[in-house]
Length: 206
View 1: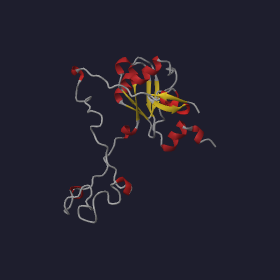
View 2 (view 1 turned 90 degrees about the vertical axis):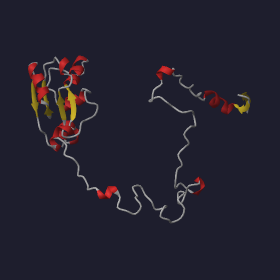
View 3 (view 1 turned 180 degrees about the vertical axis):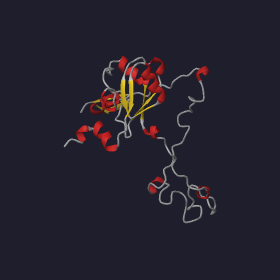
């Protein structure tokens, strides 16, 4: 096999291409003094040592007992340990999950989103706006989970379309804006099965 000198080393031709195509490291970004702030301060390369992984075998130097020694009180300490007294997280009572409003579970769609979809040609203003239509027209990136889609009044100042909207929840302010433009709004409740039968009909076909 032929060989060639690359960067001062005698390298076989098989490895030559890999060495030549190896990407060079990017030069450090030069910042002006007036551009420095707390968000872009960085240390020199290697300023932070690599974190030691514990309990990964004897060859790592911190295996088995993870550097804690044999069975002592120090070796048995855990997160939240307070010197054998009742820790604070056990002194405080448990807190149940907070109640979430029904409409907060829904996927929000604003009036500005609808107007932007109409201006870009993704949404036809002459058909009834439903959750399934919003997914098909790519107004919503993913299929929203149950209980459905919520209409909000964000972007009302540039909303000019006349629409017939039929969603799972509509804010009162959004209803006022749509009706002022001559459209209609209807909030439709669907249970879990009926909602997914509309969004994914292929899964409920006989």
